[in-house]
Length: 320
Image (cartoon, rainbow, N blue to C red; front, side, top):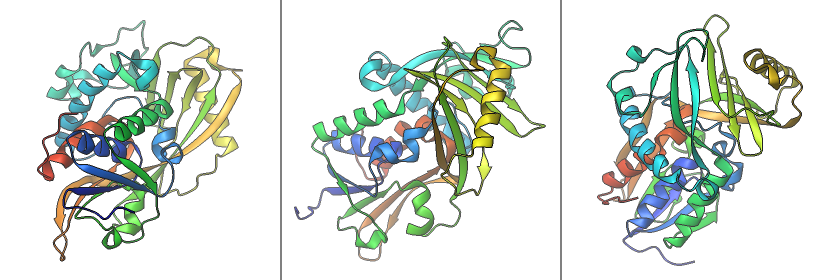
């Protein structure tokens, strides 16, 4: 294996945050490797519903800035959806008021109050990036490799064992034991993939009384139905009863979903933290660690903004 040089960076983690950070650094000219315990296709990012929206992430002001940076990138990538996995899709965000969102909402093109014909209650209509994550993760890997990066499957149990002058910690939920940081905890999300009966718009509906969020995301070749927010639940096994309840809730909103053939069941563990940890740490031996984890259910939404801030913390002028 090549010996690390002074400009070497090792990014630990190959979810969307890790890969996006690696792309930004590599395309800025740094020599970057990604160390990952599992392939990108097996990370939580791979099963994300992946609608752009600042969801379950703190601190709000920074998260919204990161999200808007990412939104601009996704709008550009949406010009090549087959290659990038990014499309801009119309839909309705239920139980949401425009005046509750803050100034950032004015920078989202076309965001407006939904009409009564579009949704029976208070809601917003929007055209938002919706990302097909398996395709998008492949794009990130391809861009990273074209920029000279390398991806290596390695399990890291101690950041101190990572032999590079600069380490970027994008381990998500893994940071709980790796750092260790007990503030990171799982919020389990279960999804059902069904054949699409002809739905072209996404829909999110929240029932505060029941404590549920129901969503319908049309992806190429499938319809993604969700979801759950199970606090501190580590189970990655789909629950059949939960799956049936998800389908029933979605069918109550869009009756054509009833009877749609089930294609698959997915579970992801969102790496939730009271606040994203995005900061530079100097180790006793003089090496630098930049932590970039704890993005909860909004990793896709803020990935590019956080990647560019991580690059800035390393003194790298990011252009990607």
